[in-house]
Image (cartoon, rainbow, N blue to C red):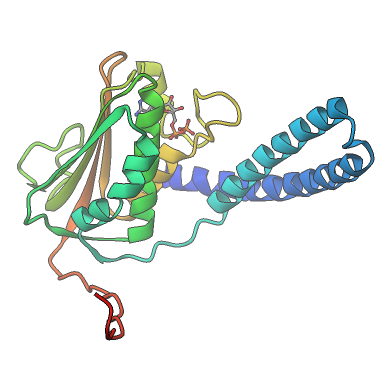
Length: 261
Ligand code: ADP
């Protein structure tokens, strides 16, 4: 618990700082972008100049995307938990995940039909799953397999890497495993730190796992990282079971149509 609190405090401090920096940084980018546009107007007919100016514009775009991500991080919304079934969430994301992973990564979901419900913020859970999948994709540049495995676990069963006194009760386990490059001990030790990344500048923000950690702790769950260089990575997320039924918001009933097929 102390460790979770320290992480939360660190995130809060980093969030405040980041929000300010991202905001000012964005203003600087706006000035550059405005001036580049004016220069395009004057020099855009010269192919040499146009190439350089386009290069500047795309760098400015990358910078704006980065600062938007940082701002989103700094302004993290408080969680709005509801009763959700993680299997339904994963199934809903199927298309999105397939597309994000591309053709050379095989993607599979394994789950029992009677998977328990949890009490979490569903859009944050989606974010976390997407981030884990994108990390897995980045770890498998030559292709591989990504498995999302969901199961019901009860305390008394061994919960990997988690002190048994913390892990009493029923949990839904969400395990995301890849066959990618894996992590060294050194990377594993820092992976949950905000802004820790091994990716080239502009490609990684170092916030994905940190946000996953924050989400899981705020949801009273547990997160465990298992990885070996060359042997892939498994991230296990334990979310407390909810005994309540999901409150389904049903899609609107379509207007009756006449004629047609
Ligand atoms: P980012 O992906 O932006 O770098 P994260 O916080 O999501 O930020 O991840 C931090 C670091 O942890 C990554 O840069 C990478 O070194 C390592 N990492 C995360 N997920 C994986 C994975 N599935 N396989 C290998 N390394 C990973």
